[in-house]
Length: 559
Image 1 (tube, rainbow, N blue to C red):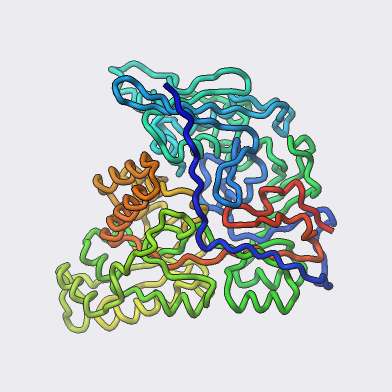
Image 2: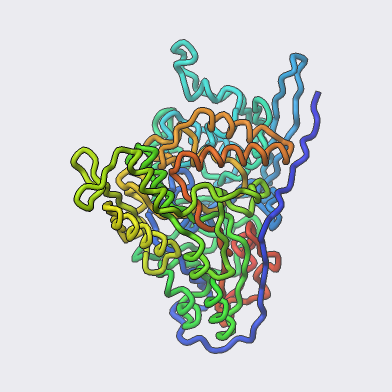
C-alpha cells in the first residue's frame, strides 16, 4: 500500500532578517547602464557548469541561467518553482519499503534558444550525474538509492551485461517522470528536485554512457531556461542578459554583471556607487559603517561554516594531526574579527541546521604542552632546538586566501609561533583563492583554511564519505572510515528528528577524532544594497538564510 510522506521542515537557527529602509543619497559615479545590475563577488575558477563547478562563486555566476523543479523558501522548506515533486511510500509484504517520487514540470517552459523544456531534460541530468565516469563534486549517485542505479554505474555487477538505462527512472509523458528509490531518504525530494534543468539537446551532443566530453565542452558557456541568458566571462566579469521568454515573466533588469572585487573593498564599492549588491563579511564595524552611510542591508545566519583542514594523506600520522589541533586557539580571533556577528562552533556543521549538536563540547582545546607531547608520541625529538624525526624537521604548510582580511589569520600566526618555539615550522602561504582551491583539489598542500556554504540538510557524505577521496571529490581531508560511512548512511534514512540528531552528533564526533577538521566559526551573512540604484521595495521582505533577492530576481528593479 502507499502512504503519503510528510515533509519535515527544518528549523532555522540564528536566522535574523533585517531590511533597513533608508533615505537615498548620492553615491558618486555610475559605471553601468541604468538597467544593469552589478553584483560584487569573489574570484572565479572559470567552470560555469551545473555539473562540474568547483566553487560557490562560479555557481553564483551561472545560477540565474537555470531553474530548478523546486527551491527552498525562507524556512528551509521545499517549494515549487518549475514543477512539483510528490513522494509516496510503498510497503511490501516482505517488510521492505520503497519510495516512489513523481516529478511534474510546468507547461510552456522554454530554453533560451526557444526549444521546449520537457522531462527528458531533467532525466538527462540524472544520467550525467550517474555516469560511471562522472568526476564532479555532486553526490547524486551515492546520495539516493535509485532502483537500478548501482547496476548502471557498475556493469561488473551484471555478469558483463552492459546496462544502458536506470530501471528506477521512468518517463511518464513529456512533463512527468517517476523515480523509484529503495528505502527511505530524508532528502530524496531535495536531491531529485533541486537539480538545474539543463537542455539535453545542448549539453547532450555526443553524450553516451561513459563519455562526458561533450557535456564538459560546455563548461564555459551555460544555457538553460532561467531568468537570464549567458553573455560571457571576460576581465573578471561575468555578464548575463534578460531572458525575454522566462516562464515567470521577463526580468525588469536587462543585464546582470558579476564583478570580482576584493573582500575589503566591498563596502566602499557600494558607498562609491561602483556596484549595486554584494556580500561583505558581517562585523560590528561593518554594520556601523553601513548605518552611518545610510546603506540598507539584510543580515541572517550563514548556512555554512569556516574551518581549518589537515590532509590525512599528506600528514598521515594521527598524533601529528592531533598536535596541530592542540595549537589552534579560536575564540579571541573570531571575537576580534566578528564581534557579535559570529560564533565559535565545536563541530563541523552549520548551526542553521536543526540537527546541529548544540551541546557539543570543545574536542581538542588549545594546549601547546599537549601538542608537544603528541609530536613526541609521533616520534619527533627536540634536537638542537628543532623537532626532528628521521633526520627531517617537522614542517607543515598551510594555505589561506587573502590572509590580511581573514578571520583565521591570527589562529595561524599563533600556531606558527608556538610550533617555532618547539622547533617545528608552520609555513603560512597566502595565495589567490583559485590557486588555493586547485592545490587542495590536487592534494598539493598539508593544511588549508576555507569555508563550506549552502548547507541545507544533514547529508555529510560528500565531505567525509570514503569514496569521495578520489580526484575531484570533496573529501580532500582523506577521511576513510567505514563506521562513519555507515552512520552517515543511517542518518539519511532516519525520519525521526531526535534520532537523527543523535546520529549526527555521533558522526561529527568521529569526524573530530580524525583530527583533520577544526571547525572555527559560523558567521552572520550580510547582503548590502546601493539604494540609489536598487529599488528596495522590490527586494523580498522575507530574506533569510535560504531565500534572498536571487529567488525573485525577475521582480527586482534598478533606477
